[in-house]
Every structure is written in structure tokens, then in C-alpha cells.
Image 1 (cartoon, rainbow, N blue to C red):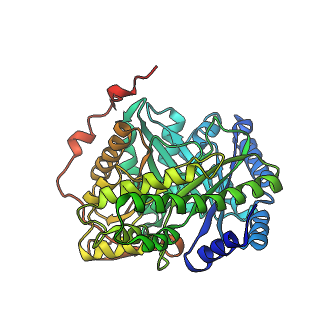
Image 2: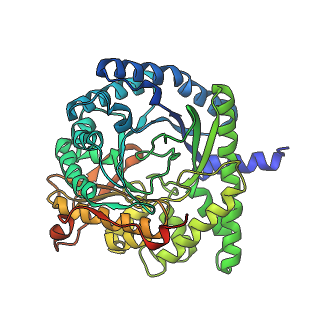
Image 3: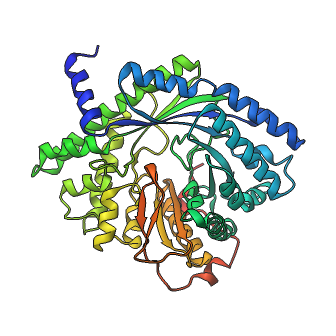
Length: 454
């Protein structure tokens, strides 16, 4: 039973502390759409997406109205398109035409993003994988709602350095293809290690091949709620602090579980997972950096930042996992720069660098996220950054990712503006020393010794 105290508490979290369900994401398998004829393939893809997701936005809005819970985004994830399009696509342009079909379908059903223009290349690249990867710059430039992700490594397989090298080049090309919008195309492109099959958050969402034909995943977020709760335990010991984070994460996740169950019932689609990720927005008070500073740091980036983030991430998972029948996705704390006003302030103050952000990714939910760098950064340097992140994920058996934006025509001290949830970001300097010879070796970095568990 839900009592009036719980109702009032949830209402306060929504109205004053920026609690929201960040996304309802419908995962749709496109494996049954595979066809060697490109036009037939695109027609099957369009028909399945528009049929399965026809009521997704309307149902999300119904739940918002009935329960008073903000549901910010309604989204779709699909089977990685490199798998679906391999039989039909003979060129990169063929894949771009599928991207346009996906964009049209997303627009038809009213979702803001569709994820899954993806390839899984952690051990090697098929011809289809490579064609899709080479198509990304034009696909991102010619679509509004399509997001792309490439998995280049895993704990079990090691790191595919050929894919890493190529993705450094693709990121630069994507930046150039969308240079009139501060290289905005790169905000829709993520490079993963250990990518999860059930992540509802963009830009990295895709519908894994082991998933059901159609599912509902929900991503819930509440950094403002956690920060407010921690204000009650200022000066207390770490045990008290951890208990407060766990209790708060439990409450936030219960909201996500409620929305997920309702969406599942009304859409007659199985429930997948709730992803409890403290995903910030540019709104005042909705900042992961603010939580870390409430824990006791003068500024995020100060000594102790990585330890504070590790504590936060772990307690969020411990509290959330008890509040839902299935917690999955990424779940923990995101540290995007452009989407978090506290992170932006720390960069501007000189407290936060790309090297410190990399250290923080060892313990956060994902990785280097929404970071803008000078537009003249060499592709090999970007590949080196991807390799570093993939190594962190591979060795630590966790998901890591890179969503980095070389802003063409801009340099350190300037600002890139993306608007909406993507916010804005000061351009960070990168290490000027070259790693080109390292990246050019090619081949695969082997999996670590502890990957052998059979």
C-alpha cells in the first residue's frame, strides 16, 4: 500500500528536486526484417517500428498525466543495424539510406531518439560492420533522431584496435560533416567497451540479440533528489552518508518501477529493466557534480573526487537493486560535461581536466561523456583516448564509453552550444603528444588473464 506520506514525498521530489523518468525506451528486434533486397528491408523495418511503437508516446503522456511523474523522453532502441543490413547493404550509402528510413520511422511515432545504428566489433569487423562504421558521418549528418554506437572491446575478447583506429577517424569525419552545428553529429555517437544489451539511455542504446522481440526499459534519474537528501547528513560519518544514498536511490527506483510496469501493461509489451542512472541536466540543482561537492569536495576534480564518485555509484546500485524486479542497463552515476552545470563550472575554474575525468571513469557508470575538444585534434589522439577508456572497461569488467566532440573551427577557451538536454560545454585541452605509432599497429589487444572463467 502507498500511504499519503509517500505520495507527498514523491510529489516534493518531482516539484522541487528535479526527479523525473528520463526515458521510456521500447526495444524492438529487427532480426525478422532481414532481407537481401534493400528496398524490402527498409519497408519491413519501417512497418515494424511504426506498428510496435505506434502508441508509445501516447501511453507515456497518459502515465505522466495520471501519476504526475514527468517522463522527459520516449525513445526506441533496435537490433544493431550492421547485423540487420548485412545481407542487403553493399556500400556505406546503402546503410545511410537505412538511417534515413529509421529517422522517418522515429518521426512518424514521435520519439525524440532512436538508438541502434550500431555494430558489435569487439573481436573483429565483418564487411557489414566496416561499411556501417564508414557510413556514420553521413548518417548522423542526414538524420535528426538516429543515434549510433560501436562496441570495440570487451573483457572476454580484448580490444579491436583496428576498430579503435577507424572510429577515431570516423569521429573526426562526423564532426566535419556537422561543423555548422558545432559538430553536433558527434553528440549522437558513442564508442563502447562491454556495451550492455539493455541500456535505455542515448546515444548508446541498442536492442541486444538476446532480448525478446519487443520490451520496455525505463531510465530514471534524480541527482537533485540525492543532493537534497545528503544536505540532511552534513558532517555525519560515511556509514550515515551511505545509508542516506541507498534509501534515496530505493525511493527513486520505485518511481521507475511503477512507470515501467504501467507502460508494460498498457502497451502489452514485456517489462525489461529499470536503469537507475543519476543522469544530470543543465538545470540548476540537477547535477552529479553537486552531489560530489555536497559529500565534501570544494569542487569536483579536487583530490578525493574519484573516491566520492565510487562511493556514490556503489550506494546507488545497492539501493536501487532492491527496489525493482530487474535493474539493468548502466545504473549508477553519469558524468557528462555539457549536461551538468557543476561539471562545466569545474572545468571553467580549472579544477577538472580530461585526465581527471578519465580517472573518474574507472568508477562511474559509463565513461568520457559529452566532452568537447579542439577541432584540430588528430584522429589518432581520439583513437588513443578510446583505447584508454576501453582498457579501463576491459580490465575492470565494466562498461566504459567515449562520446567526444572535436568541435571544428573552435579551440580551448571557446564554447560549443548544443541546446536542450545536451547543454553547452567549454572546450577542453588534450595532451599534445602523439600516439599515432601505437594506434597504427593494428590487430587486437588480448583479453586480460582474469577473463578466462569457463
